Image (cartoon, rainbow, N blue to C red; front, top):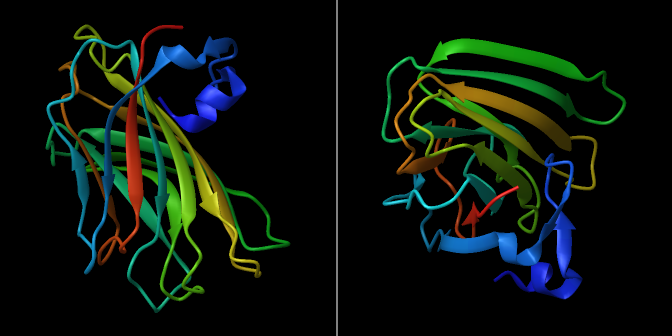
Length: 196
């Protein structure tokens, strides 16, 4: 069990609208990128014994040409044009929030992540909810909150939702940046949510 959840006893999960006991979350797996980075992180053999899934992560990727990039997600190794996503985001101080929507893609864009353009200690955060992931009677829906603050004018925040047009139970999740690779110390934790 997460020390954070243990310390507060109960939490209001992102977007659930009700209080969940800390025991409602069960750790499934955690992965941390090692030296040299990695082009992606993947959770496999996900059990179907939970109601929903949640991923919590800190991340950064290898790019020096820009301060930010996108974090993409694929499910069950599906690289077909079966994904749609929407984003409400703000990039930089004093900028107007923007929206983005895309359909028939081979991925879902779930967050913005900082690059090597930023100071070495700057990592972004992301929380992704994957709803009814084992239900074989419906397409799968996700929602995400992410972003980072580099203590400069180039920070960002993103609210995202996405859809995978497949009724199969989700058994694997792949996370990767839109270009290059994830940096060392990038870490993602996968949790199962027992019920709401």
